[in-house]
Image (tube, rainbow, N blue to C red; front, side, top):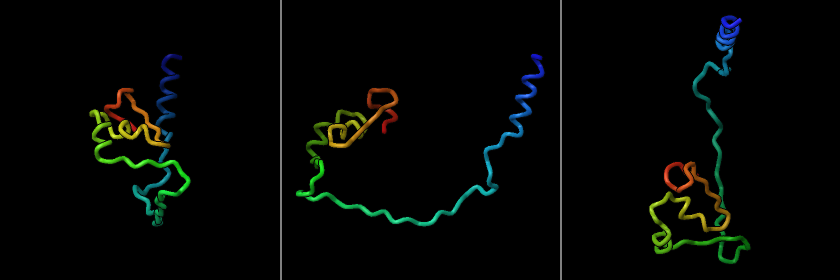
Length: 87
């Protein structure tokens, strides 16, 4: 029994294949990205950072941590300290 179970699992892994297409690339249709810039009287939360403010807030951490105090900005860090992988 100790030999049969690993053999069964090894055989099952040979037939398991997640790839359904033989092609390694796919051609997608082009898209057009459109945006609207918020004006001064637009009723949305917005904030413009000047170069001086960015230099004051930049303590050597990744850019998302510099922008974390802006409206609607959510950040995370794998290590929790703002260095390395952030998003």
